[in-house]
Length: 380
Ligand code: SAH
Ligand code: SF4
Image (cartoon, rainbow, N blue to C red; front, side, top):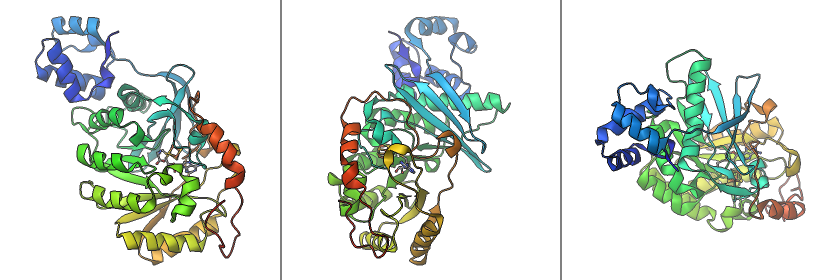
């Protein structure tokens, strides 16, 4: 089997070229052809010697993902579904805004964390994506969009690892993919514009800070362990105080001086004034410099959960803002094509029992919390 060059960051490609008896700088030329020009065919690479092209033909390939479908939302959001083999498929979403173009990228087919409110989580876990499969989403989207918009300028300015999967549970594939995104000879994205979103894999947050510091978003969703345990099962392994400490350590390396906390607003579950006050206390006590991003829950039938009414989201946001925490409410984009946060389900052949486990716990989980006052924080 030939090597797929999308699997390599520039360092990896240089080592590969050396293995072919070529000088390292050839790798830079090759890398630019692939990522900056979208080439998939060695014969296009006119400034590479014929002898090198011949060696590449026989030992390497540039292979993207097979596109299964494309949907464009009324608001311009585009969702692509890619085949990753064995009945699994993953999604990437392009979100155009006035001043930026953001691509939401998947890191796994499914996800083993199994958050209660997440459609990917409900599907269980099939496998990690390779570096090449992560990069291929950007490679395809960037060059497709340039053609589609008839431009030679860069279209994607931001990448968020917020598609399917928990990126920090696929660390070894993630790092070369991030490096390719950041590399000036690759996509040249700013560290501040590449965001890894995590449900809180504490040891890997530390490693990311060392190996490849980029912007970090942490999916919080609850201000106490008793509430977070059933929503984000990983919390049982890395509870909130440990998570907050890891955020602080990360800030020493981060390209931004704050962590973004994501908080999905679930009707009657985590959206009460009590929860907002507990959240303020948590970030104050732990002294983490942060911004809060409230995400209106995007419902899907199997969740049995509903979105908090907008008035409650506003009230929650106001409590946080009044306490001095910069708070934004995320605009929902692409929900008419199921491309909004947490709606990405692709197609996953579950190889674990995550899906089953969630289904079994649903009845326990969904006992509604009394609306006001909040008597209990636990959901059980
Ligand atoms: N696994 C990572 C990244 C992918 S999820 C993580 O959990 O951070 C990306 C974001 O979408 C997370 O903040 C996640 O909590 C949020 N999300 C998941 N399901 C959602 C839903 N149904 N509605 C709104 N946001 C959701
Ligand atoms: Fe996995 Fe993130 Fe979904 Fe949780 S929210 S199940 S960590 S993709």
